[in-house]
Image (cartoon, rainbow, N blue to C red; front, side):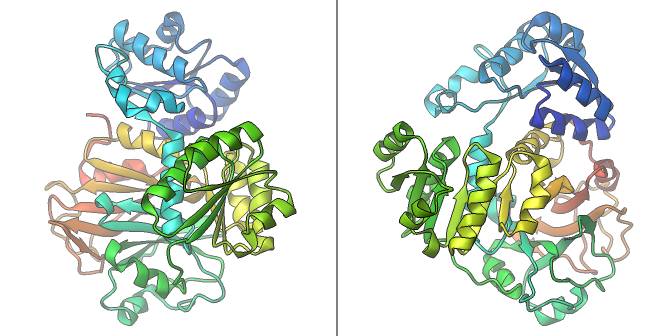
Length: 459
């Protein structure tokens, strides 16, 4: 597939790396010659230097015969014009744009993004995606990652195995015996930066492992308890940073979290005043989140969850660590720089949210429409979890999983059939039409196409 990406920043580079791995013909446009040199040296992509919305630059990038345009520059307006020019002049079939400013995301103007006006097929809002991700973690504080599958009927959960985890050293095969009625399947174990996919059932968890499991959403509390986590939904939250993400998250807490006390620490006085006027159920503190006195004023020493979402990665990391030292039970930090993500967990922060990874996931979901219904990233960009429909021609259909030839780098985590969640066991048989939850290690996505007999493109 021929794809043009507008913007060679963190998101554009991450998208390019994924798509070129899958043998797509990718061209990236960016104003910075340095960015283009970097991305073309790192990945097998073409580069064009210039303003991405200019017709001559788009023409040089080959958008006239591209099947997909992805606009992820730092400017909402440039992204919108990219889509407009690609549609009007070059008739590009599918256009995806990242839009950040909340004024452009107001539901009352949704008609703006139609074929007759600004033709954008899919809008990605990083702030909204990040807010939703953090909201899920507030509901399950003991997890470092929580994502909804199959419309909320199932959950993908990431849990850190501490020294107090009661099932350390227990083989995965034996877990089924210990919890026969628990609809839970361990999907992947991340150990020392490497992914271990259960094959024989003899695998066992060790202290420090980060484990991803899939479970029936009605069994989530029991699944978490099996790992030694019985924390309830967060009842006290302190948010560091009152920008777009902090505001969206506070609105979500006010609307959907009952009996949860929420506070925001905001450094800018005018912004703090604006937040106080807009959020009636949230306490606003004007001050520096790295100031111990401000943290004590916010009651961080007795809060359940501290969430750092300022625009500065270093402030987020340091304030999360300071909050933990002050007494917060859980700390979540927003980190934009990919290289920081693996480091932060080792320092003691409970969960890390990476906006670019979440945005990439949202874009890939649309790129791989076919029979792929959803795409979910896992930490450190080591792989992703897909919700895919099994076609009658799939190699998985009609064969017990213990005898199915599942390629290395893939693992089956669950099945959703006729409104029912089916845990994966050796004798489980997948039927045509099932939604299958599949873990795919980085670089192995092409194997899913062969296994499920689906085309992972936009058609």
